[in-house]
Image 1 (spheres, rainbow, N blue to C red):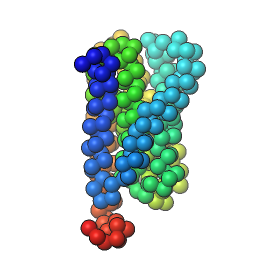
Image 2 (image 1 turned 120 degrees about the vertical axis):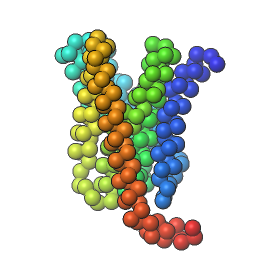
Image 3 (image 1 turned 180 degrees about the vertical axis):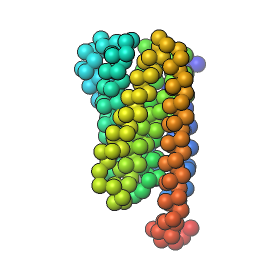
Length: 235
């Protein structure tokens, strides 16, 4: 396996495995594959491109180096504020297309957008810093980005079914969690003890995903007859 193939594999394979899991967890009314895959692709192309341009501008071409607490704070804040709305652009595609009608739908599309973003980001990191970096990131950042985007996706899912009027609080929570993760990730470059915080945040991210999954499945189970009639009662 050549270097480029290895980078593609280790960047995208973990993300696709996670996406496969969440797609099949939506048992009652699985989302159309074209929208799920399309959201993944948009997250890994459009969202990454927009985030890259804005972050380069706000960090003066990358010259703001997050090696000090103050610069780490700034760069982490920029990442959260820029990347979460950028990923939300991918989520809005199925939302505007009328593909969302609940928590599980929002979870699947949010996870898809976040995983696409994480996969491409890990591929680009590998181009700059080598395969080992992509391998390590490939088993960490997909869960992080999937969680933050899932929060926003669930917000859109709940808005689609009329349970919330605004997705603003969901954006805010996603941005805060993203900022905190990046801030301690930057600090851990010089102080290894901060890796403990990252482990804690990984567990929190997994707990959030699990919580949304249970919420979505419970909501879908309560509407099983709705889905049955919607399919025409043939299954």
